[in-house]
Length: 357
Image (tube, rainbow, N blue to C red; front, top):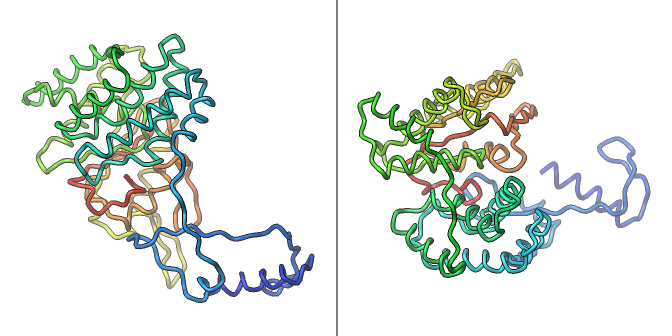
């Protein structure tokens, strides 16, 4: 491969300890601290293996599991928690116990990413309610982040573990009275029943949309995934029209399409091989148009179709902390984290990679 040739050139120059060397026909300066590290994820669907001549230039190293409680402790201190030492131990214990006791589902994740998102949420909670006891802020962050994705039986287990680790701590419920009334109103207008479980899921979706940029709704066809999102969007729009002062209640615009009904080129855009002309894709156009809008209205971009490692690979930078869509023509679209949300409606996460989840 070309990369292997280029790295060989640099490595030879490093061995010779020169300050300048010829690289692809140009003389460039050499920084003697230059090094290349490759992180690999073996046996993962959307990635290609390294070519052998490139592999030969590197030596393999195995990675070890990081010390979660130490990372959590430092992050909590940085977020302004005073009892970080105790809380970090309890939190990592909770995740350890939860991962051992709850049922194994492909959309459960108790790894470093999950812990990181809870720590950030706890920090936000601490800043918005500085007078609340730190244990309550922590429990609220852990519950808001985990309970929406658990199955019914696992919620009971998770709550029991929380009770064991934080005995006697009562978490006050957050007030969602107005929103709940409006959701019931919207469901009745559509001629649908409003069961307690359904309303609970709607409120959970609302809370998760408040803290996450990308949200995945997992459930069978006919389970009510689309209805719940539509009703929630309609309710938020209605509350705004009625003059709600809550900044979460805004008019919502929904853009929905099925990513698997079109090719990768049609989704993200591609080059015409004959004329070298760039054609924008459906997904990238929808995301760009929603992103350009500077009004406080919320925009939900709904990917209504199965997730696989191939097309979601390009979305990984969108769903992590960068929130940037990288297109094949080198364009990078920085997305608005305040008004834009990505919704994925899927039946299961069987073929989605852990990184995506």
